[in-house]
Image 1 (tube, one colour):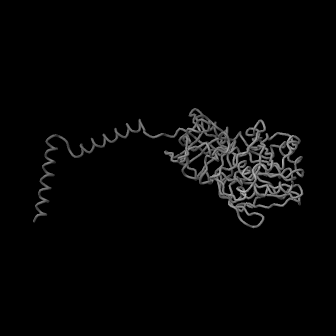
Image 2 (cartoon, rainbow, N blue to C red):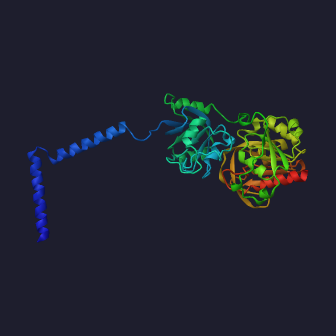
Image 3 (cartoon, rainbow, N blue to C red):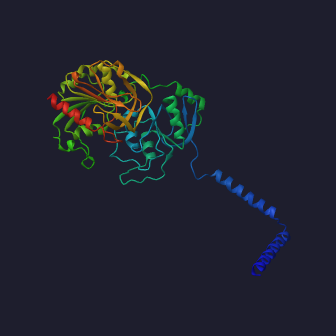
Length: 427
């Protein structure tokens, strides 16, 4: 009975409400229409004054594809070779690595910028990357060491960033077709066709990129890895400053020099073009041929200097230095399809042990072109390319990747210790 009474009361109230609307000339249909119009007006107003940033930036690739996104950092137009990096951390170290000069780096890690920028993690004195491509730019910076945000730093360094692009789709495209040249622009007056033509007319092959990042005058480096970051027992036990290393600056990273200093070396950094005779006059215990950007076949002066030094002193080549020494041995280099860029590349060393390594290079040494006396000691397990060599008769060792990591694992740090032992034996 109570339920029936409730139902009757509800029906009476509904009928009364209907009669009231009819008296005032407002039907249910008209009321719904008015509410609908109000919503349309509200949405239109929001569209006119969106509280979020709209797409104001384009990445245009040489294959004709256009990717719209949101800009951060600098404004303008930049041209470069697009590569993808699979590192899950260390975007600041990658940003300031001179080896990325002339390249746009697409990060497969979906969020970038969450720890901001700090002074301690720089790998050089400025940003060298031509452009930064990310899926999502973090809206918040959360790190006690941070001194500024990533967009603020990119704006200071005149580097364009683009976010909210489909980084998975672009990565697959680069993996399948190989590295592509591209243009990033915030300038709306440039047509897509003009930007495609710009990308197709540009190439990094045959360009001497080393000269754009090398120092202009020699300088000394003595700072080791900070005590709170040191992990190697051999480095902790080493006698500081006991060995003198001359480092050819092809774009050397700060942490390469810190690791050498941690193992007891005093480093004199010299320009990439310094003649071998002047380097030998410094009477070093060994010579480092550092990492660097671009095409190793475009720097014959570096190869000639290496030829003059080989056999006289122990030498160690890292990345570009590995490729320069490979040519000095008598070998040739070639361009990889999409390069090796990331902190998770497996390499098999001379003992059969596998190192997980940090890598960044688009060229490799062809082992088939090397003299018989050169031993390929390290092999990249992803594609079988040459990742390290020794030439015992000429007291030379090389690796194609980054033993200092930064960012990345420390599996390959022992390469510095091996070089130090070579120099001690030479003394």
